[in-house]
Amino acid sequence: MSPLRWAAGGLGLVMIGIGAWRIAVQPAPAEVWVWLAGAVVLHDAILAPLVLVVGLLLVGRRDRGLLRGAAIVAGSVLLVTLPLLLRPGAPPNPSALPLPYGRNLVIVLAAVAVTTGAVLLERRRRKRPDSDH
Image (cartoon, helix red, strand yellow):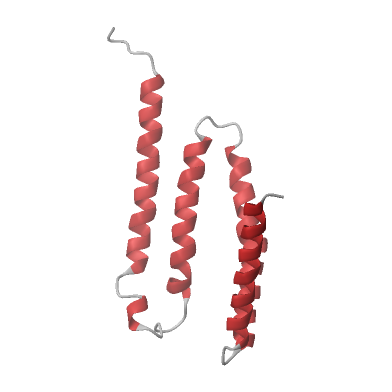
């Protein structure tokens, strides 16, 4: 193994140790462990199968790279925004939701869809033979 790999592995272990130590000194470390377990379940039971299904639906499509990119952007925006939007009650920190994030989420997802559609249309337009020549 290369020295760079050893250094990256060592740095990763140090970071894991720092994270474990920071969890251990929390006033309620059990709550953090429950949250981490929930994140693992969410990833393995929902997110990973969903990504596989989307990938299977795109097999054989010429524009699958563009569609995958759009799905990654939309999914990333959803993953960042949904926990704040689905949290019951008022946020503990008033600066957590200073804007109408529900509306803004819809606007961003619509922008991703419109941009993806425009790129797809432009690609198809370029592939068509010109009848003017």
